[in-house]
Length: 222
Image (cartoon, rainbow, N blue to C red; front, side, top):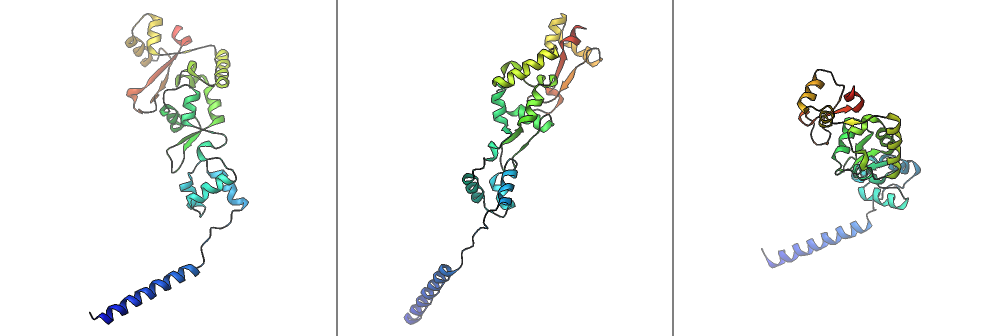
């Protein structure tokens, strides 16, 4: 290629580059639509269920836009939404070793809750939890003596006083009756002893192999 052709190509390249820069400088910037009350209401309503990464495109905005407007308003983050508790928070309130059982309660429909879309966080409805933990049938799922929250502990204590009974394991029933757990198990299968059957109590195993039998003390004595 001749020296003159090389120089011409370089000049053309520089001209094109300069034109592109000028064009970009004068091109109108695309701005996100202004926030209105309807949009803000949607953010408040949907954040307990969707992460900003999912909610942004749903509202025609970016993830960062949702985060920014949440901070400016201010609107609580998904995991801190009013009236909701994270599974980890519930775990700490009830003095449990891990949150898997709590997630299991949500999956079984025992308490109202959900997993935040686009996130690994599980949420539990606070009022639903308070109603559930004062039900005697709920006490086979966690140790009521380990509850850390004083208000919740008092609610459960009052409910237990009204109930006037107690849940026992098959081992405890066997000790009470002076027999073996095998004998108790046979009595349960024959329908002699009323029980409740809890599958996947730990929230990790859903098979019958990891089932738990709950027997009321009054039924064990009868």
